[in-house]
Image (cartoon, rainbow, N blue to C red; front, top):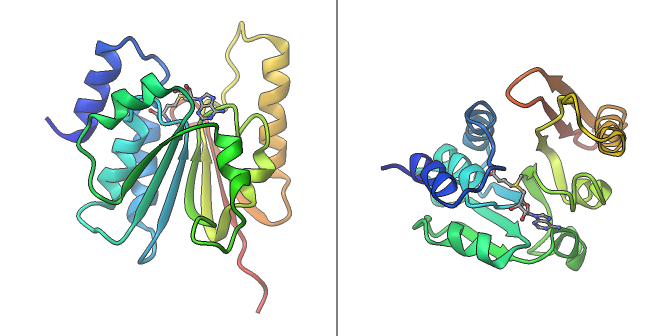
Length: 193
Ligand SMILES: C[S@@+](CC[C@H](N)C(=O)[O-])C[C@H]1O[C@@H](n2cnc3c(N)ncnc32)[C@H](O)[C@@H]1O
């Protein structure tokens, strides 16, 4: 069984229902495949590793990339950790916002070329800290951007906040796609010159 099938099986076996759906996963894999040499990937919210598996599938067989994925819940992270990842994958247990604000861009733990912001911390709350880690020409992906009937009003407001922050940001070129659960992809403009 490949990493992706194994990850979906792991999610099902453990009753984890928040994994990204295949259309979003395939998008992540496609963007990962386009990363420059030494490309750095960050996933906020590992879950049981479905998104991680899609990202890895786009990176393989190269070994020069880095993929850091942060998960708050130790038990969930432990499930993901059992997957047998390539050496360039680093799973961290902790709060995404603390991770984002722990080091400054420009240090070894600095910027990223592809970010999948997939948990409240760093997406719904503190999105500016995630954007601060996005390299020039780097892309950030958020999903679950289609409004679902029955969602609480405050959740819809928060979702709209994410949408406006990304689509209206002067340093980002963004597109909202009716793809999977609803996706926004934003790329940081390189400096002029
Ligand atoms: C939508 S799921 C992630 C799914 C995963 N990215 C995938 O595509 O398979 C969100 C995950 O984020 C975790 N989480 C929630 N708050 C977090 C935080 N502040 N920092 C890190 N992880 C968090 C949850 O425990 C949950 O596993």
